[in-house]
Length: 413
Image (cartoon, rainbow, N blue to C red; front, top):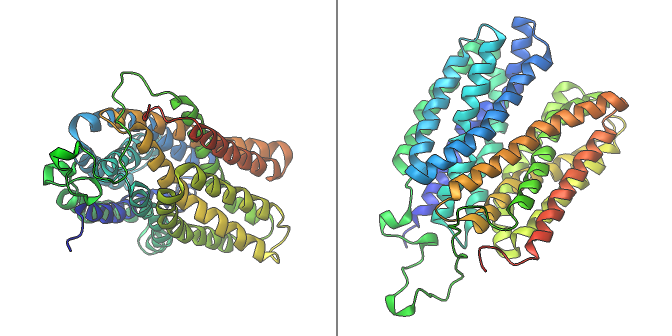
């Protein structure tokens, strides 16, 4: 039996996401190198990543419109080439404005065109019944890239310096990720004589019915579907939770007595578990439904935060392992399930634009979450209020999605 070509696309996306986004996930390692060489404050160096996320969000909207017009494969290919060039240019940084312009602005736009928006559009065309599983498998490349490139960047910087490491990463993206995109990605199954999920085409006499579950009618209106802005709000809270925890979990563990290496090791453990979470959550959502699975994922976030807030010293390693297990699985699962949920509700000729607009919501939350957590830490002298606020954001996101799911989908009316 032949393998459905859509799964080959999923495999290619998994590998290219790991290779392309791995260098971005390792930014914290380069941040320390910038501080050492240029004498910048950590706030200044970290600000470039915030700018990166802002332009990642804005670029997703613009490139989402382009995806609707030209197809996702072309946008992904050009954006990957642009990201490879950006990484190479990072090796020439001499001042702070170089970092903000190259990594922040150019890098943010480039990664927005190779990641969430165009890939979600691509997979929405190739899968319906297995949409969650496909999203989970492909997006698991992101945490895998973080788990691999974080130590790889540290080793390479120690051996060759941060400039040569950035140059090497750029060459790797151009030589490994870009060819996979050009060779294996295809915009639409119909162009290859295939149907979504590998199902046989419906016979004309059946009136388009095969007895299998079908997608809701595509949204083709000029505005946005009913309930769109409530999901937009849920996406803001999702971004707050993910990136607020991403930025502040290592400092929290250092504050309670762990060494930086030990804290980073727990972060790596979370990244590895996120790969597992991505594999499991997408397929689970195909069977149990997006809203129930998403509620369970956010329950894991809350459980992990409660566990880590109980840690008072390094002897409580069991609680830290529980935190890493729960938040790692949740981080891997949230992206694929939310992507599949959006594809279910928004698929149609304007899907790229609508998902690109949602990308702004996530980017806003990703910018606000770390800032809010930092402000609360400065105000109270501990991370308790900050982490409770992140747990509240997670619960709010789940509550919005679960409530919205109880109403009829605007795409099925």
